[in-house]
Length: 605
Image (cartoon, rainbow, N blue to C red; front, top):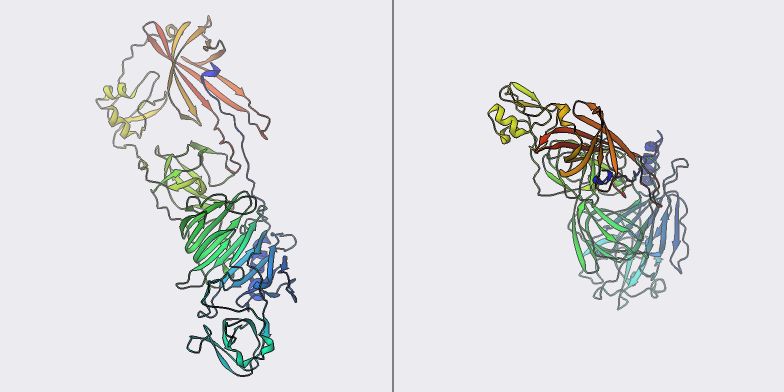
């Protein structure tokens, strides 16, 4: 008999939320304020040491490289690698760096640059070859700066006599020198070479604006993030924030050999043998890998599989909503342009489908630690949004309603909008004055005949999704008093040994599954206090009578493999209700109720 039902014994994974000290929110806020102060004067193509601890390595051949404490600045062109330390609330350590990169923004847009905010256990490696750190020059006369090396080019700035600047290129005819001003609102532009001593610039690399543009410093880089778990729930996830200037400016970056076009603010994380994920906090982005492009609007994210060398292993995946709750603490206050983190907007009643291959749990509370499971949902099951999401410090949870009007919470990562309609919530009729308590052997059709109604009408009035599912003791509303004359023999005559016809009702988490029918041999004790059921394989299961025509037993089982870390003992209750006799054979209903089966492979569930 035990083999007639599959009893699920699975691992339960735990996702503990570490306790947060009272000082943690204040610590993070103080770090933000420190970084804003230390990096207030950052110029274009500069990196700023915002908060300890950072480890920086210069490009080969770069001298005078000082980047060891908050407030230090270095040229992005001379920076090879930059690593930030993860948050340590006990020591107030949390590596934060700011960079402002020109990327492919033309000189004719003075002062404009792409802002990088690198924080936590994150590393960037500049893959643009180093050409020159430039030389400091001072003009011997006032002059305007031109966007290109020509007298009729647009004016992009000005420089005064004796004002220091960094010369970085010379024109093909040696008539112009491209200089970069330093400090707030820094810009680059072309200055007549005649205003500078020749010895200061004649060895600089030639810049040909008509040639194919080469990537600028940090326009192509490798990114690696290594999440170590949250030190406190107020800490943002480690990674890289990138913001392009406002307006119709589209910046192109290459990160881990993935081409990205931005006109937006994005958050990026990347791990070897895992994923590089780009989330668009505002604006829009395009992500191209292995010849395929994904268009990512705000509020959405896309992931590109990475190999061990942080190279694309597959094209971009499906564009899906990100968890706005998890991003609510990103340090967007350090960006030059204020933004509001976009979030998915699922209206109440909108259909959502479970997208995880192993399904999802409908929990009674919005928390990963909630063990009160309302229902187990399969991949593809549809539910309806039922309110606003809540963030538990780990992830966001959506209140949802099932088609049979059960309510609870599902983690956002397991859901996606879909077009499968969910039955609207049902309210039982209150204008019918009578109620009826279902008895053993009743059916909805039998009750409908007794009250002069129909099965469909009774189902709608009582919000019964499956008319074949009635349970002894269930109360339903009816339009008039129910009078049913039973033709069943007395209970004592029902309980006899022989072959019984069982209708099997497997119930998982107290939700009925597929009904099965099976004929089994039954032996009844002389006093009718117990019945023994023999399964086709010869195994026996004995039931003790708990009430008139109702017999019950429980079975405990354990299951484990060599790889299981935890095993849960599970108790399954079998109840046999004797229904009646037809053609000399006893009919019985077998209900099997077991604890909620955990989903395999879900440590966060």
